[in-house]
Length: 258
Image (tube, one colour):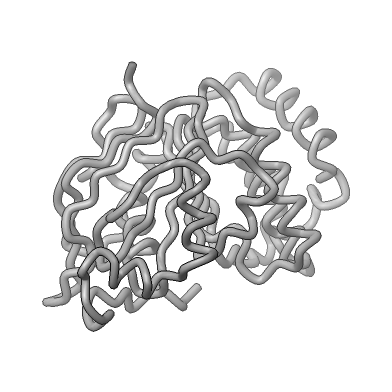
């Protein structure tokens, strides 16, 4: 069966610095996968490359529901069914959440009545009614911003969603809430890739697979026990087990930036 997201041989450079060194990854429809790794491993770069950030010289294949998206503009990737939730959602003064959703529906060519009903259902389900007429993310807490991202995901109904460190900067209650929302959005029409440093968000959901990225490559994949192993050992012990040596290259210059 065609997967929601299939990445093959993806490499990426920023100037002369090689960050991704041949990434292979497959997320089937109906599954939630986690991509874990230390700072500088290339996780955020993979997210940027998938979404078409043009600072990178990238090569390889990334298919969404069987459609190749590498080489497409950002808006074309979104229309193909690729969605990103940001690590640091930005405030957009002067544009309300409802206005953004209306533009999403129009750009996707959705029937306005059907799309409006979808928005209403998702707003009720996720408790977003109080935020719809406010400027996007204006005055929202970290948890509310991440819930707004999940609201947009529920409305957009993409084929593949890449959630870039959705647990970043959240307290434990907000982490639990966001994990629950991701699980609630699980669907046979959607594949989800969660990028995270820590296993804490995975305690509140049931990931089907966990992948570990170190130095621009996926070095281990398995079930939820992989996250438990990392929690117990840490990344440096895994590096030593794999004979990778000290972490002296492959640093992602964007790893700590919004």
